[in-house]
Length: 572
Image (cartoon, rainbow, N blue to C red; front, side):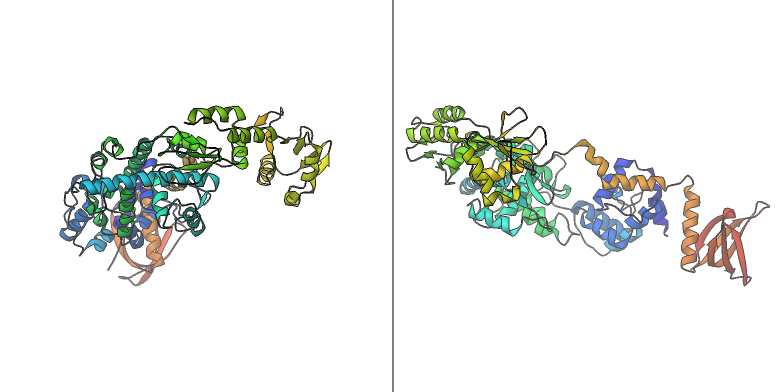
């Protein structure tokens, strides 16, 4: 075990738990059952493969300082030394650990140049604004699709091929490759979160869907900036010139591809023009200020708040419908076109779906009357009334006695149909006491009946109608999540194995290593008269508190009490 490992072990033991957890997270250490104490941790962090992984995450400015120090032998200066020490790559004085210096020696890395993007031309600015508007709309459509059917996340962290095709078929994207850019934007803005290998909409995402376009853009643009890695960020909270992003992590072979994905996301949201120049609304974002959508909003299509309701059961919005109105209208009508002048169609199923989501015939009539520029057409009013009268003909609740799911209806003929419907056989419906019983959960029975086009309503224990939502949101991040953080468990293990005498622990590890490798060591022993004597031994055994070895000078076997050993060093 090297002196560097001993030095690092002491420094690790002196750090607080939160600092250690941050270090292990930054170094990609999630859990290691073989680490019993800080000496193990130090050896692991100074392993060549672990150091290579750590260096891949070192930004260009630090990499340049580290390369210079490794060549000259001079320490890394000032703030750079503190940042590298936090990653366990240099010692307290700023000198790279030996394995780090060996990995950096011969690399020629220059510090990043300070530059700013060129201002975008009027044509480039207009195209960037159009792309931002299109992206926000596609992102909203992606979230709505995800509410109804979560997007599958494969092992690479990307969206599965089936869901890519689904979004293309829904005309949300034209190219399956665009999906990853949209999901990255949604994730950085906190609109989507991974749960059980699926992308789910968060509560923030559900709220975002009802915000105006400008507010949507602010949230996504700010989220992208805040999620950028440190190597792309500036001290004032902004980002460096995107032209420099490719070189931000010179020790990471996979970085250029990731940098291009981030640049693509910035172009999608209108923060970069096609030629890499900068639209005016991107300047505050780059310089660390709050995103200001005023100059962008001046180039966006005006949102409308009224639609034309027609006798053919369609609604036509003469421009982009205000998001909050669009979201509510789509609970009761199917959106048929995604152009700026959108078309929506009302059907018996779409009206029934709105009733299921908690609307009533009265609330729909009031909403549509206020929304319409042409009044409420008679065919649509009739459709709402007829669907509302049938809705709730079948009621699904929980039987108070048995606890099973109970289906009831005032129409016995409907119950007979349910009992013999082959599509409902998996529910195991049994006739009992004027209704039907099932062992399946209430919600599962409800959605099975709704999918089979029965006019069903869920009821609570008081037989009152209860709105059910098919979609599920991502679970919220709780404060208690830290208790399950593997870094917390690892830190606790290292603390427990620390012991009270670090010097003795270090000596024991040196002696153990010498025996395992049959090394020749110089051992200094404290004698009873208070003097010290050095023995040169070929270490052969360690046990019972004693070191055994062959004395190379006297050519005899010696047994030395470990408690009397003052120091040990390997003899070349």
